[in-house]
Length: 459
Image (tube, rainbow, N blue to C red; front, side, top):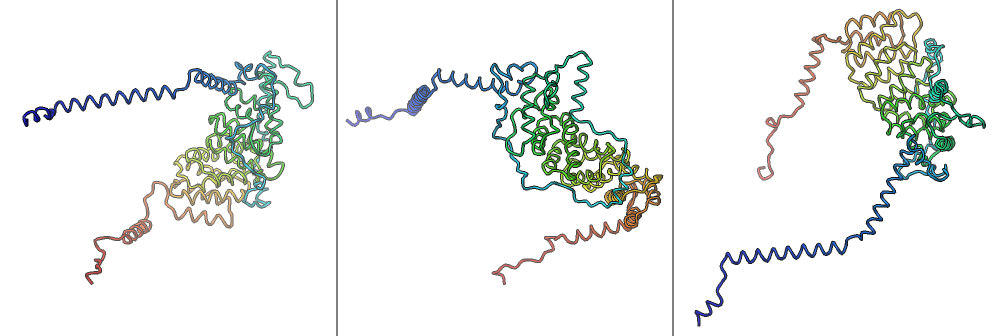
């Protein structure tokens, strides 16, 4: 009896148990996969619905491509559409645009006060024969005249009515009609969303012609600010430089000339233009310095702008050297003083160019303005140990000819107390350095020399 019970209730070998458990697990995994597959089939989107979604996405992508590329010559028909063009459709705007409110702000007039005597001295260095800077209108009109002389006929339909613009070669008439309407909108723009058609311009190969159609010289300062934001972020540095030089610079100079101040929105536009530092210098500041007719008021406003923005040292070093090498027009000292006050680590080549700039005035017979002495003093205060000894001798000869009762003694003191480039420090300077280093070392705490801390239970 006991033997039968043992035989009937015998325990399975360990190997058989492991195989049995493995088979059970495989069966459970198979059932789980089948259940998951069934759930996916139940929750899958029907084929008709998925085809409808894909078709809708494809049509939306085609609309986006038509909107972005439609103004080019190859796709003018797609941009205009098969129906009549409605200009009001382009007045809509997307919700991602940043809105700026300039209603409570005042115009910017600068912070530096210039006496009448100093302003008269600066005007003596201005070039009376300097030509007005070129604008976008001048550039496009030259292209139109070149097209006419080369045999390309330009229609006369746009010249009949008053206030209409001559057709621009290479631009469709319907496109010109759209952007003419956009230009009218920008002449009264004060805030809010900008037209979508304006946002397409940076992506066009003929963006200069299309921008000319909008008449940017008649835009409001608020519209110029929005356009500068758009072009500074979407154009490469070379194209942004052309926009700054042909559109933004003439607008700022015209506003200062008309109102004796710079509109706050235009000042903000200039700050946005620093997003492309190379284009900012090449398209705005350097042409202004080289024009020869920059006024004192313009120089004060622009130098105040330089004091408020942060620009990389590489671009600023090149700009300092270019300004130092160009012919002196009186206002160059404003820009040099502001850039030198930023305390850049300038290369020796730039410092040599600055030293040559100030040494050139040794034989100058005209009286120099106060800002020239101020810029020289700033140069010596910031870089006196990087100036060559022979350049300091030439500067001493220059200040003998041009003397200022307040600034020249300070300039002489800076020339006398600092060592020149390549010279070893004097004994006094070494003693000062050793004293400072010793004081720094003495002020450090040595943990090994600190008193032992007595714990509470040891007292």
